[in-house]
Length: 290
Image 1: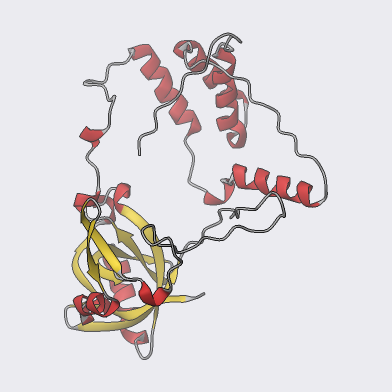
Image 2 (image 1 turned 180 degrees about the vertical axis):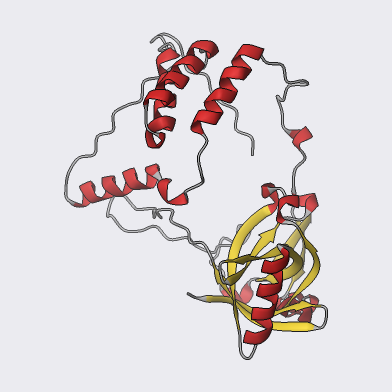
């Protein structure tokens, strides 16, 4: 693993030197822009919109747009001066229970390993946090970005997860189209609860796969081999369904299928209750909320 950060964890007067490693990796399949005429890759060019000339790295500064088209500029040494020595220290501010943090706050997970002669202090913190069941809320700066973070025990390793600051979380009240009050049919609610109970299982991450990435890799392999790629179009359907019929069919499907196929069977049952869209009806466009 590549070391992305080196510093120390600090709680009270205890100093724990650590190295940081990414706990996750991006599995997205990267595509490049290709010139159709000759098959060559199209590159990105650093070009000034005003001068219309290519710009070297030495001539680039960072700027903050405080008004439309007006910037304040910062050189690298100015930004470095603003970052104090504390950027190399993960200062634990509080120890809290993990269940108190809503998952919406979590960003990215990293692993922490002991650095230099920090093995004893590392093991002490790990054992103490494991025994108390607490996680440490701290502040950290990674690549000039300051973040809140949560340190927790994962097997025999300390893991740290960057956390959004509260003012970075959009309030639910800003979500358009939410109902003022939740009103449901009691019979439908009872059946929905039954369906949830039937589909409930222990969380096993290994059984979930990225279906799109698998299909794309299969298509890439076929193209490399010179084969044509054909994808069967999915039948369009309306969003108007008979909820009672869908719930009943879903429960029947779940009760007759194994747990591994229950989820898929439930989806098939819902599909069967949906009416195919007529050829003359134009599909509705969905509004995307960024």
